[in-house]
Length: 235
Ligand SMILES: *Cc1c(COP(=O)(O)O)cnc(C)c1O
Image 1 (tube, rainbow, N blue to C red):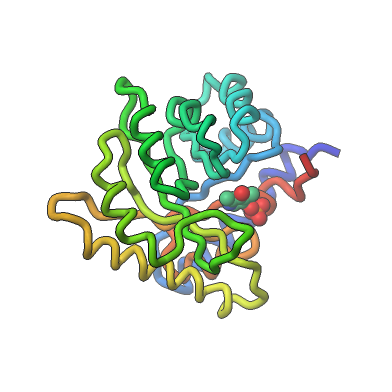
Image 2: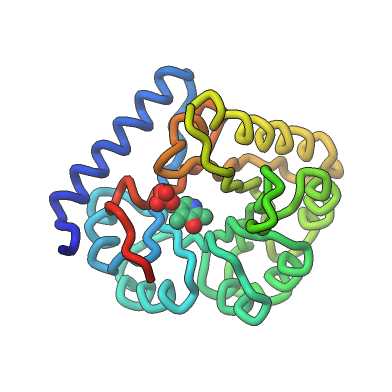
């Protein structure tokens, strides 16, 4: 059964409640809610859009382009959050406002070269493989600082911050540890950036199961799919 508008509205309320409770507990300002809409329909997106959600994250290029066409009447900020093969980088550079999944220097250079000059700079985050998992892409913590300094100087990108997808952990206390490391890495990068380079201000971290832990460590975007739309069917 497809999810109903009412179910999405109820789930959104639940997610917003979790965010506001976590922000009260940790005395922080609320992160932006990035609704992860991979595998969901354009109608599902429209439902959230009419509840004032403007940021949507997609993982699969062709699926995202199809939905962008169906939703061209909406003022949506589109975020690409999935792995990017080099032969897909041009379309990503042309059709998104943000990319959270920049996982290698070569990809950053391609996106900068391919970003159309008529568009504002592409907003990007570097994906950090914070648990050093062989199954996940991303920069290791060690590589990140020199890569960030180089990427921050590329012309058609604005390096905004860091993104991570930690391993599953069972308690909030454990979930906080990788997020704390990524937040510390962001501060270190900011100390090393050349004079005059804008500071990084974005921590894209926290998904349906670890929103609270990410907020406790300073998330500025939480990327939420399942908690908003229900369980995903396999593609
Ligand atoms: C699918 C996905 C999410 C959302 O995960 P949920 O557990 O469904 O909230 C967040 N970030 C990335 C990069 C994803 O691929």
